[in-house]
Amino acid sequence: MTDARAFNKIALIVEGGGMRGIFAAGVLDAFLEARFDPFSTYFGVSSGADNLSSYIAGQLHRNYRIYTELCTHPEFLNLRKYLLGGHFLDLDWLWQASMEALPFNIRAAMDHLRDREFYIVVTSLRSGKPMYLEPRADTWDHYLKASSSIPIMYRKVLDVEGQKVTDGGISDSIPVQKALELGNSKMVVIRSRPLRGWRHSNFDARIMRFAFRRFPEMVIAINAMKERYDASLRFMKRPPSGVKIIQIAPERLETRRAHKDLASLQLDYEHGLEVGRASMKEIGSQFQLD
Image (cartoon, rainbow, N blue to C red):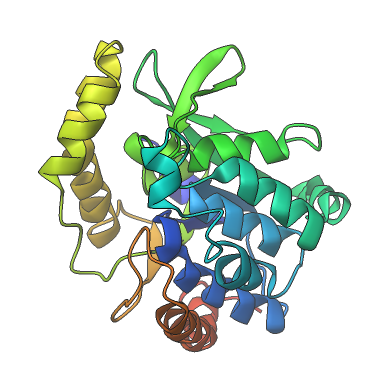
């Protein structure tokens, strides 16, 4: 075990969760409003990586608008399109639409990372293990799409660094142990579920096992998802000596993973703003920030 007492970096980790990420968008917008960014390392998984990207680039309200204006559009989330052979969650359309309506400020993001690190988590189909990708200007967009490519809902399988990859949440939903390995003894984790935990869906697991039946290591990874998730929860509840972890989680959440009800999204975003504003004082106190 790494001796965490030798480290003093602060990591910001944002969990995925599809449309539930609207809560994290609210938390991060609260941070942006206050110009609060004591973090040296960022980890984003699936929609968490999308939310973190706008935060790193300093683009206030960008992800709120993506969720409420683009993710609710029938071109993005469409069962009929899926039944006709397209995507249920059409990331290709979403990426193009966001590029046109809400372009990502890649220059500001890269400038911000000159003395910081950002890792986007994807899952390797060959090994079933997580890959922690550091984006560059020419790979940032592709890595985000790869991390967000929820199996079944998005039909394509993307390639990264010569490997076929999929949603990072399958292999490492909350990369707290990786953050410690990289020298972060203080962590803030923004969750997309209440603290009571995760209800594992056996139906979803069966569908994913069928979809990836040609990749035996992926099937093993899918079978171990709940175990890994629970291990991360235990790690956060009882971290090693010298490690401090603050979890920011919704008290309740109206939005589901594939949910486009605007009223629910608005409520959960405002809840994220409220919780985010309240959490900064705790982070400053617990981590002894100046």
